[in-house]
Image (cartoon, rainbow, N blue to C red):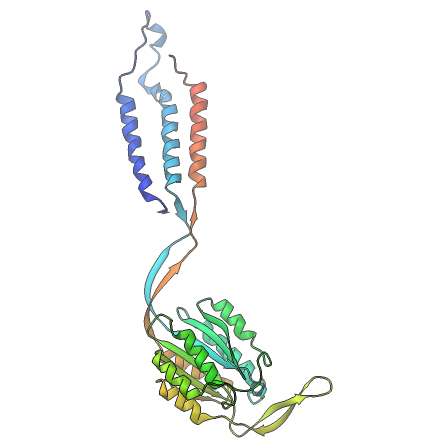
Amino acid sequence: MLFARPLLLLLLALLPVWWWRRTHARRPAARFSDLRPVQGVGRARRWIGELPAGFRTLALGAWIVAAAGPQGGSDTVQETSEGIAVVLAVDVSSSMLAEDFAPSNRLDVARDRSVAFVRGRLYDRIGLVSFAGEALTKVPITTDYAVLEQAILDLRIGELDDGTAIGTAIAIAANRLRRAEGASKVVVLLTDGENNRGRVDPRTAAVAAKEFGVRIYTIGVGTQGEARLPIGRGPGGQLRYQTMPVRLDEPLLRDVAEMTGGRYFRATDGAALSRIFEQIDQLEKAPVLVTRYRNVEEEYRAPVLVGLGALALELLVAATIVVRIP
């Protein structure tokens, strides 16, 4: 049991002192001309006369405990574990609708594998950046995995201007990690295209990320050669697909990763993407001091009620069973 004001418990030591002084204090004696009426009162029944004082002691003790602020359902534990600060940067350009990860498209598989990656975390702090022609922080670095998972599932094509601004995505993700605690800071950038938008050059952004101590792991998504890509919508609003060449700037993604001490991976199917996330999980680990908290609530009501009950019993006994004669 924890207490908000534990020093107040020292007052409990005064109760035995008060009780001792009370029992050893010289009491006034009543004079009787005839002791026969009280001869039947033995020592065995003297405890009845001490009931009011006993109840008063119980009431005072209970109220002292209540004032000390007993706390339940709370603790603070610090432990050293292994974790990372990581930002997932996910491409949401229209080409991520390519259906070469049958039966799903690239974005569906990326969402699914990213959620699986998050669910495997214990102490990592993770953020989420989505990018297309521009980049947007969806979730700042957090350990609230439920919020993060929902944000990943809510990633949609069309929420940003179309295009692929890889440099902008790296800059925003690295800026999120700049002040993150811990020695291990990672950006996992997942894209299926080549940089064609944004004012920040990807290699320049990578240099800045390295200065912040950030490593970048790049993942090139999609099959090699050709894939069914969306080219527009039909009269009914449905997407129209056409088999087209796949353009992925692998030299750029490899350079960005190597410049920061990271690695480049190529994911040609969902299983390969899962294995890549597993490799990243094994590569990036660093000791981190983790503090776990639980909600604190003062449980003072019970001792207060005990004190009130004891006080009521004292008054009742003093007015009925034990009557003090002046």
